[in-house]
Image 1 (cartoon, rainbow, N blue to C red):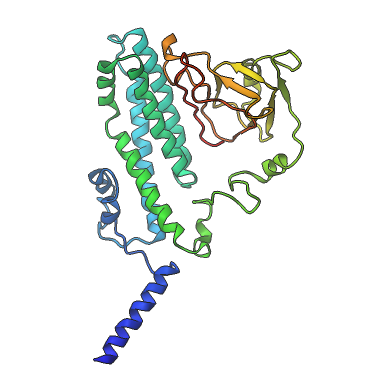
Image 2 (image 1 turned 135 degrees about the vertical axis):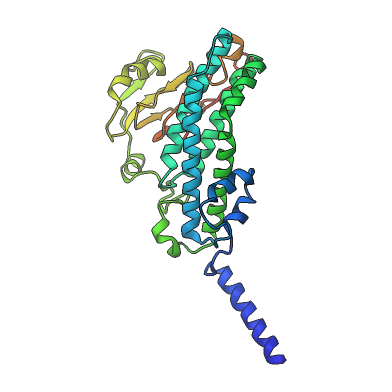
Length: 337
């Protein structure tokens, strides 16, 4: 009897040690993962062709996330198509403005989800951005008190927000599981879930070329200055002139914005790649608003600094969330910054 108790105790200790060092196999199943999502029934619909009680390890949990992301991407594409085909005959001009925002926002979501499918790199970032896009779309109708328009609109988006929330939950489960396992066991997955910082204190997504640039004296390609001492007096003017030239290329293009308060709503288009904005300090170079809901603009259109791309840097300048009573809301859309 004592031998049995000793053996049981020994096995318990071994199991605890294996779990502590991440060497024990994950005992989660598809079904148990789905119960941890906001919408388990939708999650379960993803596993109709597999065994719900299949034991998951790190490999097929990644695969399950891929399945969820692909279904979410398909939902986003269908939602964008339905929005583009909406009958706007009953919409007011403000309603059409909010609809236009939604069309662009859901197009962005398709782009963002495409970035995460297959590689799972930055899935957390892209899924969160897509969820934020949905809220910004809703806010456009709420801003103008167009609740009847919002109701008809909400019927179109169907299950897309639910699939988004589920994919984000599954990704969180995966990240939690990965964090408990020694990095050596995930050498073949290291590009799927990056650490926040590399050894040189830069995020791992910062390329070697950008690290070298950030560690050196940065030379501006163009200068924005209110006093006329630069190439342009406003950031928007500089970007308008720059737009046709920045559709490709891997070289980082540096825009130096001199000290001043710039009252403008800046929008960086998706076609403008690899930009870097540098100011004279967060208390010196300040971007403030020029549009607001009171002026007939949605929250989305009144963003102080709006962007719809990745691979962009901001150094030493401020775009305040609240600048004044007349510009009480700002949405700064940053996928990676």
